[in-house]
Length: 571
Image (cartoon, rainbow, N blue to C red; front, side, top):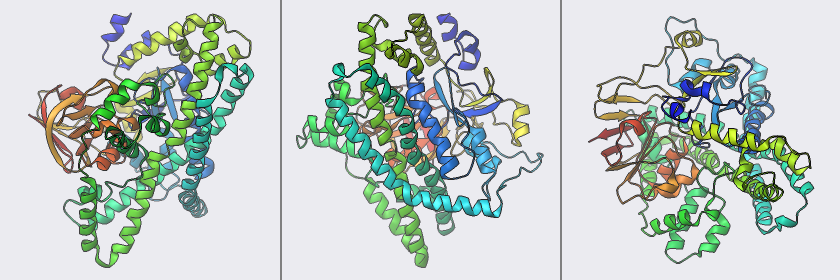
């Protein structure tokens, strides 16, 4: 079975050979995408992570769009996102429903944002802006209230999560009763929902602000406006993982102790929302490698670019500069929180990681699990039962089955766009595209082909391949040529000076690796993706949304990355 699955082209062709008990199947056909999910969930998640970490994050989305903003119903669990064979996806339908309630917006705009598709000129015009005047006024009031209030809420949540983690790191876990572990596990859900809301609000608010600023600059500067905006919002500072990378430089230079760094930043790491993953605190080899690489300090290129871009904008704007400067200031604030809003969630995740490790130790000691790693393949309800003295039948069989499913799923390619039917994944077919009122995306060309348009995706088009070029979306300006390094795990690569990172996507903990790289090329994403924000902070070129970079670029190949033009040239 393993050989058959490993030879399959994608998850869709192999799904009949996988156990689907962990899939959050919808009750009716629904559109889903992996675009944007890569930032936070780069790999298939374990069942305990799905129940304990991902589920409340999904509910946080519903809370933000429902009660907080009033743009769409909160919905039932797994309305806004889904998990299929461990892969996390975003639901497109709820976002389209939300667009129906916003004036000047439409479902077609959502489909374009998520899938990079164009309107079908023969389709009947789609309705948009369905909300009445009173609803529009209410939604506008909710947005203003959210913009003013969520940063303070996020700060309080960060402080609370930090205090709790500090206490958990000092806690004498073996002497805590089972009942206390059960209470903490049960209480985590509601708090984690609240921790998710500010991050969602920052993401929702910063995206249209970025678009609004870009459109304003396009009216002032006809040529090169998009690249100018990217430079105007680089080197912002105050971003948590940018500060962590700077602290690594201090450790490498002997100006900060390693212990002090771990106390402040040790809860971060690659794939940091996965309970089975190791944060820097528990992965000294990776941390030492990153600190050693930080010994070579990179000159600050971002600040100069930002100041130069803003000087050009000020000259072009004239008397309109105060308004544009205010917009840029607002954008800075919400872009920072788009990254920093994750911090309380990551802190809380590590607290749960410590708790579940203790639970695993007890279950192994009691003969209920074969090894501590098996705890990650329990469902939350099963873990609660085991800790409450209600043993689960055939738990070892369930653990083995789920482990095998995730191992196989991780070997397969999951399409960026999915038509999810009750009990089955499918490619989005022509009839579905037609019903949506859009033209199907053109298929990507073969590696040796010339011309053609790749599959579209979130945050813009991209994916065009013209002979020896990949065209995506500019994420950070600048031009750099170097050796391509195809990176799937930031903990398993050692970069040399001048290397270019090529990856399917990145999460926040990749940021220190950017200090070693000359440039970054990413298959999925847009200017507001983590990788683009991090590249701008470091001051290196970045092109996102090239779709097939990890497939068409060879390990070790020389490539040139033009972040302003959004082009990658293959040599």
